[in-house]
Figure 1 (cartoon, helix red, strand yellow):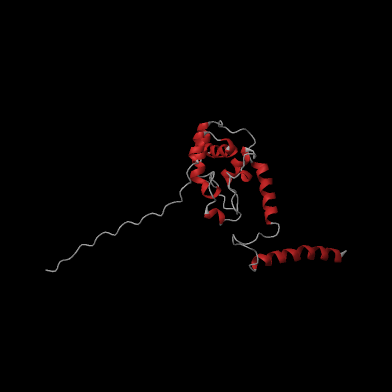
Figure 2: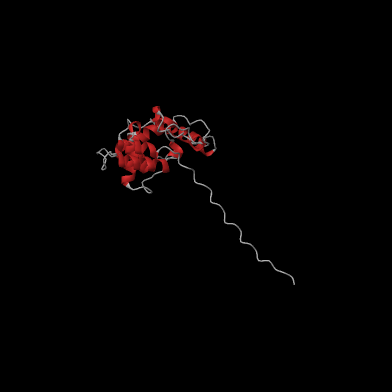
Amino acid sequence: MGKFIVGVILGLLIPAVIGYCYFRLGYAPIATSSAPMPFEKTMAKMALRAHIQKEAPTKAPPIPVDEANLTQGATLYAQNCSFCHGLPNQKSSLAAKGMFPIPPQLFEKDEMVTDDPVGTTYWKVSNGIRMTGMPAFGQSLNSNQVWQVSLMLANADKLPPGAQAALGTPAAAPAPQPSAPAAPRPSRKKG
């Protein structure tokens, strides 16, 4: 019986030591251009789905799905989200191409979230997603604004003209602030 217990302990300890060394000795890929670790995508998706299923709102949104809310959602999306998730009929930004995982381009037909429950999108926008570059907007946008963005994305394939117009121009990357011109030095005349 003692050999069996030692075998179980070694069977658990050896993989833990190998895993520790994998990370500690720098073998784990950390660059965005590196291939994912074994089971990384599967484990991350499984954890995300389980957590969202447990926490995402399941009730109807507290705001109506009308042109005003969809247009405001489109405006907020263009200002805060389009840099990574794109706009209709536009190419991905260079920043999006350099991220890992690459953020979904939410206006491309195969990556739209129109079939996701709006509460799931609300949770993602509000809380962000760790280790993906997706920030939590729940601290910078109020609850109605997060709902507006979520409703707009849920209806992205059938937006009214005002919302489409709000998405018509790409969000500009923050412009570098010009430095103030140097003040002229007073001249000293020798006299």
